[in-house]
Length: 401
Image (cartoon, rainbow, N blue to C red; front, side, top):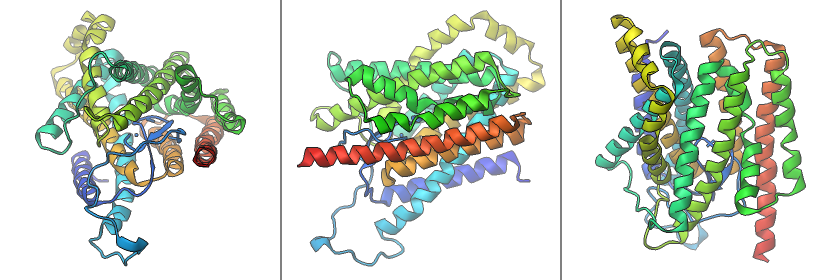
């Protein structure tokens, strides 16, 4: 079996190759999503996976200099943007899955040694913010231009950063309180809370079939929790509340990106712009939160660690923060070339891979109910994306008439 250092080197190589290809690839499809969200958003943004009805013109990286004339469809060469795009998307999804699995494994191992989830989550956000700043220095990302301080967009961006902080911290707490597999079974419910947040923020009521498509998710998660050998009440509560905040992040982020697309004096719509901005803000806010939650307990936990275990624990902390940020950054890049339905299916498979990998690595006991319920819930996530995209297209056609 390859060593961890070799696996990390392979991940870095895939990341560089994917970034190189995506910088030359042409985004051809209109949909994308916010990071880490199960609710779809405009092209400029990943969260998390189904399309919202409002669309914006993307500000995606590396648009081609010109489009073919006369509607022609010339044969693509090996170095043409379309060929590179077709190669970049599978690589990006592969890297997205690999980073997500590595993050969850490194995060759980770190929490096993440092059982202070608020501090671990804060450290991961700080590492992510440092990674984003480094990407700006290396010109891998474009510096975002923030909205005016007294504008509605600035208020929404602040709410999105707070929701990101709360959602990430609560997810980390859930992972610390229970099995990784159980947390991600509960996290499959995120589309439900995204629909609720959409109504609370905008008053928009989705078509009845869209809400009915949420039933398999609810039934699947409920069945998975029934007699689950990894069941944990604190983990269930933390994961459920994290779904609430990530749903709010998805909707506020979508509203910010809509305003960014229409604004002329500011823009955060580029690849990594929105997620980088909320990562910087949430990292700053996370430090006082960690001090308030853990305080002296963290110092005592670090002091209690043997010298031989201190450096490995810190290494896991840094790696988990890096994986968490790059995972979302890769999502921004790869989703420029896929439809919301593809994303919905991709996110459903992501949950499956996470559950299976955590069971293999940590020897978690899921049980038959857990496997059947999680399968139904993940299939429900994909079905929700298909139904929601269908009705979003119908709504767009009605408005176009």
